Each structure stands twice: as structure tokens, then as C-alpha cells.
Length: 246
Image 1 (tube, helix red, strand yellow):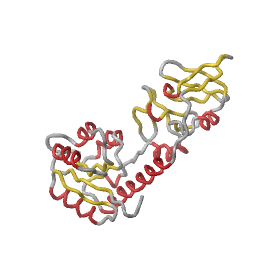
Image 2: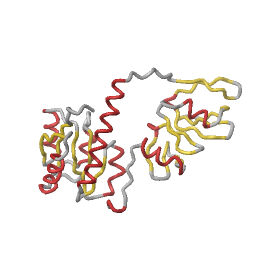
Image 3: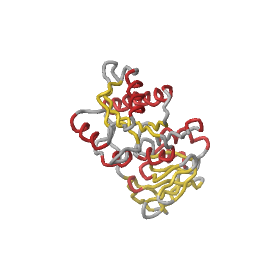
Image 4: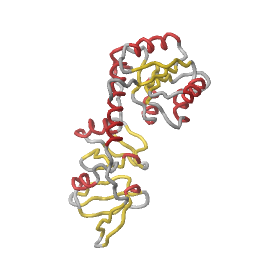
């Protein structure tokens, strides 16, 4: 991110003290520029239509329209950092692709950690814009019982290891083809698939829910291996709440 570019911010918070704290914190960050404070989500909708906002600091419990409901109706979401006194909404929040989830009272060190993620996302965004991706095939033929079967990548839910074979599970069926899970991992690299266990590769966009130890795909719970936890957490943008943050 260019050192001259600042990320424009909007605080959506109905508690005056909480809004003042966020305003003070934002003013201490050189790459953030506060554009305003909205006491409710309805007013915020108008502000977002009037000017370009890069980041919103959004409270969950707002009058008229709750924070998470507000996020769901936005077509073009700014980067979002949620601020709340309640930890139980974290899973729903990260399903909306929020940058971070801050629990009140918010310490400046925790705020700084959250906004630094904004810089990382901005760098990744600029990198994607400057790098033209190579076109990917929409399907691949796999050898199943001496017959070549076409499998569309968008139909694949997950791939399961069967030692020297792999079972490709799709929305409608499952196919067993020769090839170890490691070979499948290499083949499906950069195609929206993620290795979560020595026996499983999942399609990221087919994940319906997750926890620290499991991901749910099409109603089936698949384990996350110990050695894959860090990679899975980074890939799914999961931020598990520490006990001292509760």
C-alpha cells in the first residue's frame, strides 16, 4: 500500500463513549482517515452512498437495524471491523468476512493488531490487481474403472484419501480414481481447494461452518489435522477468541 494513501473510515456506534474511544484510536493511526460517526445503521447507509468508505468500525447492537443485519444488506461491503461487548456472535461475524472482531472495552494494542490486518488485505488486493491470473480449466477428466469421467471443479465438495486412490465427492455422487491425496493437493493448488487433514481436501466455497477442529461440508463433518490448523485458520480468516478477550 502506498504510504500516501489513507483508508477512509466510518464509525457506526450508538454509544458516545465507545465512539470517542474509536475516534481517538483512529486519529493515532497514520494510514487511517476518519470521515464520520453514525449513531445507527440507517444513517450509515446514506453516508456510504454519499462517499467512498474503505473501512467501517461497526457495533453489533445498534438501534433500528442490527450490525450483522446491516452487513448482509450491503452490496459492496467496505472492510469491516466489528466492535461489541458480546463474544457469542463471532462465528456469524466471520461468515460475513469481517477483518476482525473486537470486544469492548477495546485496548489500543488490540485495536492496533486489528487495523494492521487492513494493511495486509490492501497489499493482497493490490497484488491481485497487478497480477493477471492464468485461466483455469472448468473441469478435468478422471480415470474411474477404466472410463474417463468429466468432473467439474465447481461440483466438487471434498476429496478423501484412500491410500493409493482418492475419492472425489461431488454434489451428486462420488468417484474413486487412482492417485494419492498428495498428488491431488498439487493438482488442485490455486483452484479454491484447501488441504485440512492428511486424508481430506475441501472446496473452500463449499464450507458451510467450521470450528477449531472441524469443517462442515454438505452436512458432513470433516476433521482438521493438528499440523494443518494454522494453515486452515489463515485460509478461512478464522480468529479464535482468546480467554483473556472474553
